[in-house]
Image (cartoon, rainbow, N blue to C red; front, side, top):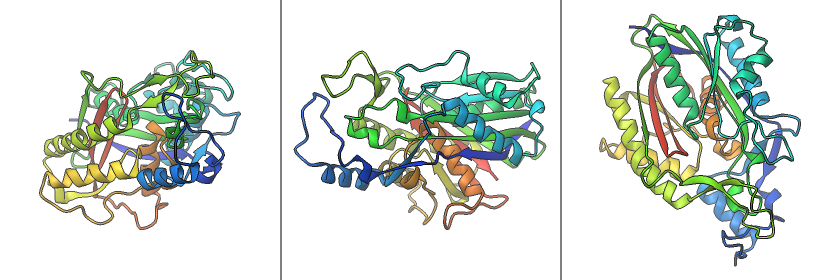
Length: 354
C-alpha cells in the first residue's frame, strides 16, 4: 500500500501586528445595530479572556491570499528539498479568494491554486492545481485528498496550502472581527515506503441539517452601511456547543482507525479558533477515554497570531516542527493529531506519525 508523509513545511506570517488596544476607539454594535452597554475596555478584556488573543497579523495592502499562499509554498518546497516541476498536485484551501485591500469582491478566477502555480513558474501541465472550499478544516482536508491520490497511485508529490486574508472580509462594527487574522501555511505530502509512519488514519464529517449556516455571510451591524456588502458572520455560541461535542468524537474515530491508544498521542494540533473552545474540545476528547489532559499536549499560536482559518493548523505544525513555540518539540516517531472545525459545518482529524 502507498503511504504518505509530510516532508516539508512552510509558513508566511504577515508582518503587520494589530494589538487588542488598537480596537479601543472602534464602534462595536449588536447585530440589530444597537450599542453595547459596556465600554470597549471591558469588551476587549472579556474577548481576551475567552479567545486568548492579544494580537493578530494582517497582510500588507499590496498582498492578497494567493501571494501569501505563494510565499508559504516556496518555503515548503525548499524545506522538502524538492524540485517544483516534480509536483503532481497543488491543492489550496481558502474561503474567500483574492480580496484586494479596499474592495468588496472576492476573486477566484483563475483559482488560487492556478495563481500559485503561475507565481511558482511551474511549466509541467501534469501538475494539477485546484482549490478546496471546506471552511477552516480545508487544509487538513487537502492533506487527506493528497494522501488519497498517493494511495491510488496517481500522485507521488503534492503541495497543500491553507491561506486566507480574513481582515478583508470582516465587519468592523462586529466585535467578532477581533478574532480574525491573515496568514498562510503549506506542506509537501509525498509517497513513502514506511508503512508505520506518516498519515495513519483520518476522519471527516459534514453536518448540514441544522448547522449549515452557523458561519455565513451577512450585512454590517451598522445599519447606515451598504447592506448589500457582505461580511463573515457567525453564531459563536452555537459553534462552541457544536464543536465541543462533535470534534472529540471525530478525533476518537480517527484514533480508533489508526489502531493506536490515547496514551500514544504526543501532541494535538487543533485549529486555532478560540482558546477556551480548544481547551474544552481537548478536555472532552480525553474524557472519552477517562483520562486527564496531559500537560503541554496542545500547542497554541492563537495568542499572537489570531484565527487565520485554514492557515492555523499548517502554521502551527511548521512552528512546532521547527522549534519556534516554547517548550513544544516533536521527534521522529512521535504520534500527533491534527484536527479542525469550521464552516459547513465541517470537522476532520488526522492521526500522523512523525
